[in-house]
Length: 457
Image (tube, rainbow, N blue to C red; front, side):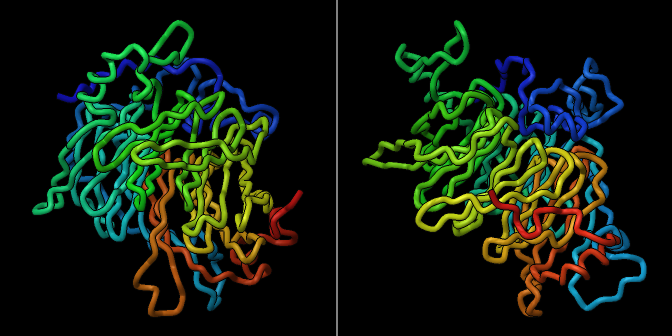
């Protein structure tokens, strides 16, 4: 019933997207000078004319989703983060708990809820991990999984390179069984909409498509659980709004002049979008009966470098924006949005962001993860997590419930990379003194981050 055939045209031109296959190995000067670059991937030794990582992977076609993958505990690798060989301190340490290394594809997306982790790659398999052990897996007919959202206790949404959102139901009697329950838009909605010529919109020169369908790769998904709305952002320059209850497309917004790399649904009906055109826009949701409309309220950033990632804290009081120049801008929201500063911790493009409590995490093409702690309007870099051998493409954080009783609130942070691994970190809310922090990281003299405290302008 559901067609899995993709009519997606190949990506052409020099646009930079949040996909690290675009210019993730450029030099510092290239990232600062311009946001346009050729397709290179993260491997500096691969020529631009060679095949993509997805096509090159020998595991894409023949591997079973249920083949066991190795899990290795890496407690000894804690020394990679914040620990020097001779360091003895009572300050809680941030360290590596373990690594998943699965030779089947680069990790492009992940989602976590309590002790469950979903990972998506450029293979056709979506894997599920429970308590850091492989729990189950299910397979999609589309290879590259760009985004994963967990909805409630029984539903999963995945966004794909072919421009489709797939919906999966978890069997209540057997949670290891995931069955595809539909595709957004549904086959019936496509058939019904195709009967009306007015439902076709121009997407490229001399090319039209139904407004309810994405005509390019989906880059990001965001869920407003309270309103029951799912947002999908795409390289086709639009974001679409879906009613979770009935899988209906309520609205399609032509949001930007280039690929939309990120969408975040926040509080009070506010939605944020970031694009390769260098802008971050704020939209306000207005509802009237069954009709939903999003009105552009403000453009809070307009720059030359591509916007590659967005994140908001749970209360919606702080918005973070990562760019291809390695910077993280942030805004504070009380009655209105005001620019709070710039965090400078990366040498290459910021590819992913997530916020948890008063912490923010930024993953980069420079293979590192910066941990930022917010105190008022000042951000401090607590640590730089190292260990990945490829660009860090996706992040997720969950509260470590076992830490609640100890008085030291800790977070379990998951990072997915183009090195085909997922790493699991334990990160503390506790901020060491600056001098102590740099001693832990093996630095001497001045801080290497000129964003401590946050630079403002």
